Amino acid sequence: MKKMFKTIVASYALALALPVLAGDKVKVQWLGQAAFKITTLDDKVIVIDPWLLTNPKTPAEFKKLEALGKVDVVLVTHAHFDHMADAVDLAKLNNAPLWSTAGLSQSLITLGVLPATQALRINKSGTVTPVGPKVKITLVHAEHSSELVWKNPATGKDETHVGGEPGGFIVELENGFRIWHMGDTGVFGDMKLIADMYRPDLVLMPIGGGQFVMNPADAAMVTREFIKPKAVIPMHYLTNPGLPGTPAEYIKALGNSNTKVLAINPGETVEF
Image (cartoon, rainbow, N blue to C red; front, side):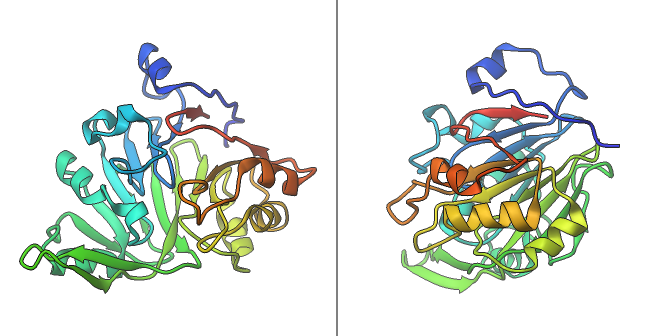
């Protein structure tokens, strides 16, 4: 049976000042754009879509990868720079597996970026347990694109390679609490099917609109009509002029809803 959750928003500095006990709470920290650090009840660390070092919204204290502490697994929703810029280096630093869509991981292997033992392949509806049997990670659909731009070390020139299809991740924690990281996506009808199948409690939802993802009104519609989660953390907005949507616009468009919007700042953590 799922625990009812309460949220505590705290700065990273405050989190460091307090003792953290395994089995206490699930911790979800937003690091800007689509980058999140999830700490499970067993103190395992999952990092999703890490773009940190050159991300203008990432706090200064996270401008070096060592600041994240130990990382047990890295997840990448698709190949675009603002979702995987630091994924390979973070995986190497921690000798951690990097799980991504099959096409992207295969390109990383073929190009010699990561070995096959570390760049691991998953397809939609596939479920893996890389941090132990109590935590399940499932790849689900997203409506976007996914090109891998790779700088060839021999020529110094950028090349475009297969990035596989984009996706999102359902992360089911030890207590049954479910998080849906949507990656980058536009609206698609099977959002309702995914919500009905996995019943996410918390959705990490892109709202920036512009040229790339759902705008606040679209995001509010799918929240209200398709998904109906307990809580949403808005993400992927105002990082560049092509992502003009704001949490205030999303909250206004959402209207009267039972979903709690956690409009936190990069570096802040919510606990469940």
